[in-house]
Every structure is written in structure tokens, then in C-alpha cells.
Image (tube, rainbow, N blue to C red; front, side):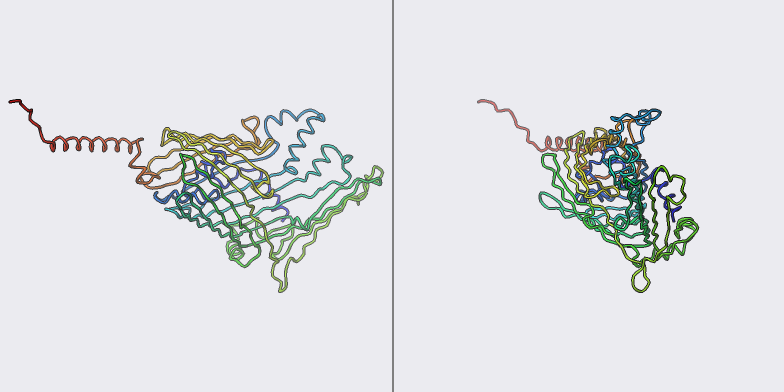
Length: 495
């Protein structure tokens, strides 16, 4: 199992991943709470589905979102901090960067929308997505030891954090329009596939500096879950356009808890198709196979370390124990994990040739994609060329947590193709600590994703040419009919 964990962490943190977003929101740097369309409002603001009540269907055929994210490595930092000894100012600046994240954190998520199943029509949307989340954190105590030694703090927290999970998220979204605003709801069924993680309530590690020497200990309880289920709930509200302004807010994952080891068909599926998960399931730890009803308790101790006993072999000891993690009747213990919640508030302004939007987003805990701090974003979409929209956005969440994004689209007939790119935790090639590249293909009706009223009023493209021709022809016909109908008056002569 340890080998499996290391492989998964390396895969999630080093290779390109896919995130739960679409190319348009990438190009707008996340400013999406009041402008998302159709199926793309799910996860941002379900109330926006009401804007599609008089528009044709929307179906997602393909989406790929690839990115890497970190909080240190960049071309600028490598050039600045390598090859020389850090002075106090440089160490403080670097350590503050890690301290903002409570350690050196790695987070990746992969989001795989299932083709043809993500569909919206009118005020309803049906979505199905496969989501993989991983969270790995090197403790701030270890970094403090590396940067400043053990003199500043006699008791350092060395507890690591690791969680990896996979799930299927099925959503049903509906909206209810009112006179001045609309509300929307997304009901989610969360089908857990697998979970591996260090239980924070049962794990701890420290390093203590005392007069008699250096000592410490650690205990990690690694729990697994195969198969699970839970429910999720998103709520949103959005106003009608008021002088081209729109306001909206949403709560994502108000409910969002997964209960693992609940009866489901996942274990049977894994056993029925073992070749699909070869090398992953069943989990292994060293040369041993971990049973479905087992957890791992890993402990270590560092004996009193002094200069006079560095050569002793017994200074560091560790032990691994496989324990039954079951309840009465021998069934695997049921435990819960929280799907983090987000609060979003947005505002947007629509003009004839552009759209500007801004969002404030906050999480309630530092877990997976959520951060317990505010994140501000602003994005502009230029729509002068209706079939070729251009986008640019910027977001900031304090310190180096900033993002510069850009994107474009090709919207012609039934084709909605978009691409987006973002410099993450930086604003250019030499300062970015990650990137995001996203592409997506969605189809709609042959007349485009427009209502009949919008099609009739369009002045752009072939549709606009046709409308102008139709209007001119109608005007000419009206003039001719009016000329024929009017009586011709004779001049009045005086007698």
C-alpha cells in the first residue's frame, strides 16, 4: 500500500491533471458566478440555468483541462535561490511563503466529464463527472527545522497530511425564475470509488529539543475505503439584468459528505475487473496485501539524540501493524470525509461589444480545492466578433496566490469550441509556479446557442445579413403597398 500511495502522490502532483472547470472560466480567471452558461453553471451557480429556458440544448462532447500547481518552483525562484547561501532576509521571505499554506502543499485534482451525459435543455441540466482529488502536505515544523534549526522552537509539529480519493458525481440541476431574480438547485449523488488517507484525529508526530538531547515520535493511522456514497447540495441566486448589470451568489456543497465502506457495487466491480486496476487494487504495503477490513498503524521513535551516541543503531525505530478496522459482525468500519464547501459572490456588466465580470470566493477550510481565505477575480470577454470571443482575467488571494489568464473561443452554428490558458501563482513565464491549459468542445442547435428572439434581433454574421435582407425586403413591400393604397388627390382649381 505504501508503494501505491507514493505512486499516486507522484502521479497527482507531478503529471498534468484535469480540474473541475471549463476553458471559458480558465480564460476569465474564475470570474463565473453570474455569466456561466447551460451545463457550465453546475458547480458555480445553479440559478444561471434559468437563462437557458428559451434556448436550445447543450451537450458536452469533450473536455481536457491539464495543469501543474505548486507554491515554490518557478524559473525566477530557481535562479534566485540556487547556487548560493541564503541570507536571513531571503530565508524569511521564502519561509513566509510556506507559512501561508501551513507547510509545503501539493494539490491536484482531475475532472473527467463523461461525454454525452452532460446535457442541458431549458431550465434543467443533467451532469456526470469523475473526480480525483489528492492533498499532500509537508508539515511546517519540518520546514522550520530546515530553515532555522531547532533553537527557535523546542517542540516542532511534524504531522504530515495525505488524502487521495476518487468519486463519481452525478448532478441534477433545475432553476425557478421569478420576476426580478431566479434561484437554482443542484442535487448531487456522490458515488465513492476509493479513499486512502492519514486520519488526522488519530495521527500525530513531533520533534522535541531538550537539555538531554533531541527526541521525538510519530504515529500515523492510514485508513482505506472502497466504495461509498453520499449526497451533495448546491444553492444559487441571480438577479435579472438591471441596466445591463447582474448580481449573484451561491453556496457550493452546502451538503457534501461521503460515507466510506458503505454497501455498494464498487468492491464487486473491482473484483470482477481486476485487470483494469492491476497494481492498484488490492492495496499493498511492502510485500503484504492489505485486506478490505484492515487499516495500517505506522509508528516511529527517535531516541535521545546527542553527539556522543550518533553511532548507535537503536536511535531510530519504526513499526508497522495491520489492524482490523471493523465494527460488530466483522464489517469494515464506516467513516466520513467532507466535500469542502465554497461561497461565491459575483457581479457582471454586459455591453454591446464586451462583458466584464468579477467574483469573490471563499472556502471554510484548507482542504483539497478550498482555502479559508478570500479570492478575488476579474475577467473581460470581448464579443465584437461574435463567433470569435477573446478573454482575459486576473485573480488574487494574497501573497503569491495570483493568476493571469487568457482564452478564446470559436462559436459557429452548432459548434462551441473554447480554449483557455492561465499562469498560476505568477503572472508570466518566469514567475509562474504552475499553469492551466484547457480545451473543450460542446454542441448545440444549428442556429447556435441563442433564443428565437436573439436570432431575430441579431445584426452579426450570416444571421445578421439574413435579418437585414429580410428587414429591407419587408420595408420595401410595405412602401409599395402603401403607395398603391393611398388615393391620388387632384389639384384644386379656383373658379
